[in-house]
Length: 406
Image (cartoon, rainbow, N blue to C red; front, top):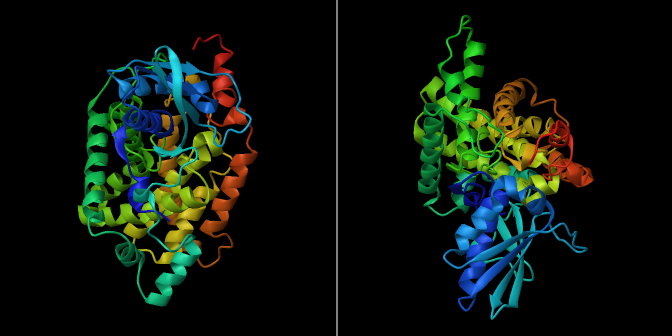
């Protein structure tokens, strides 16, 4: 398993797989071909079908600048497409295509280069590749999850996670202060500030909790939709879940930043296991792989902050992911707005509920986190393509039938 740095990438929204990944691929291809007079990028699969809404063409063109780049949204289905997010770059010299390379945007901002081995800086640093193995190692070594992470990571991981946390907080605070319409043509109004400042007639703790958690999730997700700076957790489209839970608990319980950083580390373990053994790509496995994994990460983090033992933390993560199984990815007009923003808020609340339930029932469970990851991945492969970030099914299809134009 790779470093938990891999799950947390600081960057610009709105999509880790459709903007951050293609941008990285474009920069790499450009650096390897200084002889090019211009470039062409051909997008396939989900990148082609929802790339306009996600701003894939804009991200590639900006990455290639000042050299011109033509972006083609191909309707062709490649017979041997290794991932739904496939792209191919070409160099143009004297009006002819002279070199090419395929890339795969595999989720969370990561890319794979067709025909190449994993880069050295992406090598695995954890010997354990399942939570069962991690738990066994911790129990045999008489250490907790934080010690386990410290044993495997470089010393600067904590400094990096502190940077991640500060970025998450800035995204929430920025989102809470803004009003107006989100870009993309759907005319979606920002709602975070409205939720946060609304005066409540009934000030029950449960209602206030819902108000605050949802406001924080909306704030981050709206920053993402507005091309702001956010942290993948595990993706841009699910970036509002974990920060909302951590920020709410910090405000409520006055938790110091160093303990929040520990919670981020534990959440990262569960996110990395999902990337290793399943997927965090909506185009590959639906939104269960994005918001579902984000919810499991947040539930595990909350469990740690509640003082849970390793079994209770695992159970919190398992409950959270289990009850997202089958969740489709059907963004309206290919934008990371409907249902994505609201879905982040719902998942943040579900993460807290999952952690609370785990407190009572961890000794009676039958399903492990590893088991639910396998189920999630197989479920994702079974979901029809139209429900995996193509905007051709579900809500996206229902909305398009109303006569809306893309």
